[in-house]
Amino acid sequence: MSKLMIDPQSVPHLPGVPVLDVDGDVIGSVERVFIHQDTGAPLWVLIETHFDGAPNAFAPLDGARFEDQSGSALHVGVPRAVVEDAPMITSIDTLTMDDVHALRSYYGASPAVIAAAPSQDVSGISPVDVVRSEEQLRVSTVSVPKELVRFGKIIVTEERTVTVTVRREELRIIREPIEASMDTATPGGQLSAADLDIVLHEERIITTTEVVPVERVRVRVTEVTEDLPVTDTVRKERVDLSTSKS
Image (cartoon, rainbow, N blue to C red; front, side, top):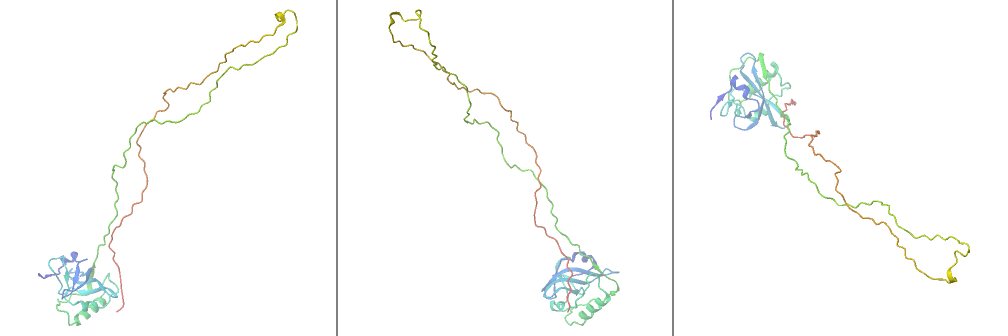
């Protein structure tokens, strides 16, 4: 295993890198790196931990190294238990001189610190900003076949009722009185019976059909626009500021 030391060129690769202690136990991940304002030398690392009641902790980069290459897992030179008991710093944006003195005093007095670099001037420590990223939902449309429509004609049978006026002949008897006279008397004075046949007529209905054009149908494809809600899951990074009293 190579032991690449932490130099200013390695600082941009540190945020998000796993942090291991001197024995290889996982402490957390790098949240922010604090460097010297003038020299750019990395001095302290803020670790997002998984400790109960202590979401963040500071550890010195004195004696820290990368596991394999720049940007790989970061080994700090102290055990996990030492980091757990480190002083809580209320402000994580800028380390004050009091904060640095408290951390230096704690780690300098700890017998578990296995490596120490020459102390830096703490008057100009500045933080390394963490760039927070998030996924944004991009929505586009694509035209796909939806439905096949076939246009054709079929014959439909239905019943129609119409009213037609028809005529017929009926027999009506008209009686007129005749005055008695010799001119109209029946010869011989005899009565006679006779039948008279009359043929009556009527109109009968004869139905026929005729095919005639009644309607012109035109089929046209039109474009209809509608608003549809789109729901999807996106991820984003969150930078939290958590403090607790020791």
